Structure formats: C-alpha cells, structure tokens
Image 1: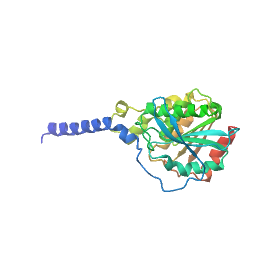
Image 2: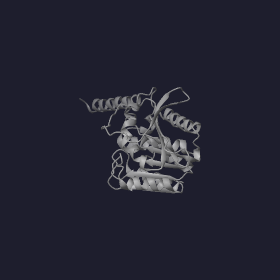
Image 3: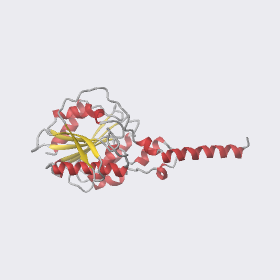
Image 4: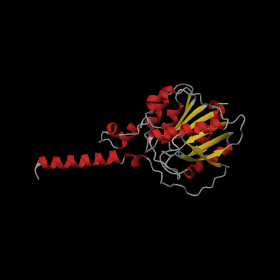
Length: 266
C-alpha cells in the first residue's frame, strides 16, 4: 500500500468516526436507561406528581413539603444518567435539613416521553419553576440545585433571577470543554449541538452560590469547578473535596457545608 493510499485510509476512518459522533452525539451525552440504583429505600415522604411542560410532556417528579411557611424549597436538577431512584441516597439526607424539595426527571428519563436536548431540558426546569409558583412558592424562596449536567441547566435558568440560592455540584464550564477533554482529536466545538455554556452565563447570576466539586473527578475535570467559582459573583462559597470523584459522597463534611449554606439564606 502506498503512503498516499494509507493516508487516505486514515482520513476516511477519521471522517467516519466524525460522522458517527455527530449523528449519535446525544446517545453519548444522555443516558436515561443507566441504572445505578442499589436498593436504598426512600426514608423521606414524597408526593409523586406530574409537571406539564409547554410542549405537553408530563415530567415525573417527587415533591416533599415539610413546611409551607418559612422553609426554602430546593429544585433538584439531576445529571445526565439514571432515574430519580438513583438520587435517593442524596435526598434522604434532606430530611435532616429544614427544607422542602422538588426533584424532576428530565424528558426521556424515568419513563417520561420525549428526547433530551439542551433546549428541552431548559424548558423542563422552567416548567418546574412555574409549577412551584402555582403552588404558592415565591421565586425568592427557591434554591436551584444542579448536579453535573443539571448544573448547566441551573446556570441557564438562574440568570437575572431572584432565587434564594444556587448550588452547583460537580459543574462544568461548558459541554464543549468537557467534550474536548474526552475527545481531544475531534472538532468538538463544531460538532456539538448541546453546548451548555455556563462559563459565559454565570456572571448573570446574582443569587448566592455554592459550588461543590471533587478534586479527583474523572468525568468533569476539577479545574472547571474552580474556574466557575472564580467567575461567579459574590456572595459565593465552595466545598472542594480532596478525595471525591464525580458523584460526590454525601458525608458529614459535605452535608455540613450544604446545611450551612441553606441556613445562611434565611
């Protein structure tokens, strides 16, 4: 085989991979069928509700109202994989905090209709805000808590709003940056449809913000959480764990920081 033919073969293979990455990219970004639920039982009472979006998709959600008066309400926006059950180990800890919460499942997740996209997830989160407001929860009493991919949605909907606070857990600067870290030899910025550009938006958040990130995160590099913290407006707080990976451990240290931040918002 001549050198020219060899190079053409390499180029053809490269272009085929680019073709596959472009047309199947959302299969690489969203994993609704992943199940890491290990059977931990829910030990906080929840009401299973359906939240309707403007494009007529019903989102399965869990709502816990401990107190309709002075307590804040967390809107929990989960990451790119798994079901609501995968977050039981997190929300079980909320029973020890004076807080109400609503956790929604994205379109295409937890049996919901539709397919996840950046625009679609933004609509899902905004629908949850409308639902809470219809329940009498004021914007200034809502805390937006984004987990991983959910941080990109949290930053988007928190811009120029008067939410009580924002919590970003294992956040990324942009999906382009994450893509480049995993696929350095491909033109990610050109190929990517769902970009979630949090680094360009976080300056528009005026609410108090807590950023939590594990220093050994193998999915979203730790420097991204640091950069978002540096870009964020005051008042801002951080919890950077030396030993946590992407899915942070809800241990005593993290829960203390979480509780302290929530208490500071009252």
